[in-house]
Length: 241
Length: 240
Image (cartoon, rainbow over all chains, first blue to last red; front, side, top):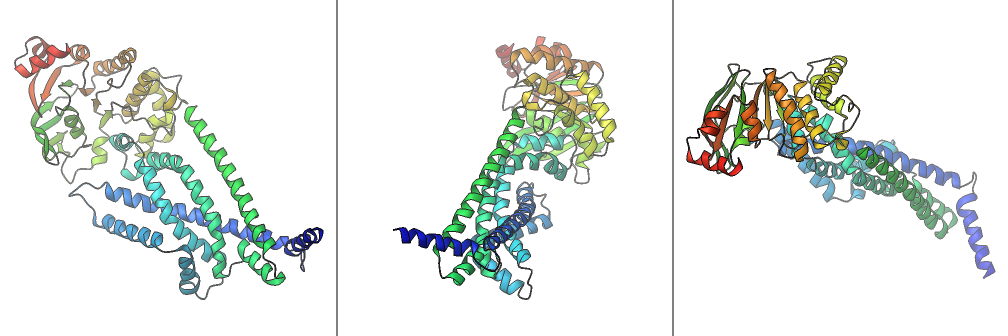
């Protein structure tokens, strides 16, 4: 029994401390990359999501007989985009991005951000669309009745309220993105998961690196959840004040 | 002056307005009454094109506003609208609610709009509520702020769509008072309302709308005291 624990201790040492420079630095670096990819993809995803959602809703709100052809065209594009992205596995999208579209690029972080951001954009657009639809139509009417343009009312009145309503769902998307960063391993980016795989290959031990990163992911998700909860409570408080 | 010529409105198969022709003069106060579902709100909403008229013309200052060439945003800037459910913007405080449209449409500079907003809010009795968000205003206060918001665009015409219907009884008076003072200043007003006492006191003319047409119209005395049509008699007997 004692020797078993001794073995675990050795494994821990090998997985996290041993190495030319201490291995925990590698994990830290992997975690940093995970965060970089998550934040980049989130920003890109929300940007794409807002644009797609606005296209989809404003196309749906067009009055019969007063349709503009370019909006209808954009709407078709948006629908195809969402269908393709949501209908194919994220890992396949990553592989296509890394080895087909950017075959010769070594900017792996950027490629990862692009792939995850484009993926996330499709989901975020649906979240935002439901957020926009949840806003009372009276808000749009009130804005338009004052003589403001559709786009102004969207920007100043509808979107800010929609974003606030969907913040919990966006928070979930952020956490999903954080965990999905583990997939970028397939394009060779040294994220947290990739680091664990490399160390396992070096030490021939799987337990400590893989359970270790599971715990690291979990702790970070808990921290993110806590921050989101705090933000939500603060927003809810500003509603009542 | 607003001229309405043979206005028809369909919602799909359902015909809501069946040919309305009327002229509303400058500085005139018109109250629109009638049973629910009669088309009176639709009529009002057609005036600033929140609903697209299916047939007919609406002419404001000589311009056909429901033609394809008309600049809908410019036209709406001349017509303020007040809604039954207030529709203040909950993501902004009262002052920002009132300032938003003048600034965004380029009508006023920020400072100018702010001064104007303060002046208007003071006028409707909300001088102490500049920084307050709509959610912590009472219904009556919200509606007064909404009136100030509409006035900020310095409209020629004010449209009111059942402005007191969503209010607690004790708050109706404060909103009607604001509307009364507007009427006295010579604002052209079209008011869909169930407040017959208010209509009698303030209106120059009353339209009784039923089944999508103006069944009867005239001064309050003509309409309330010398009602001609059976439908109108029947309606007034129920609510007066």
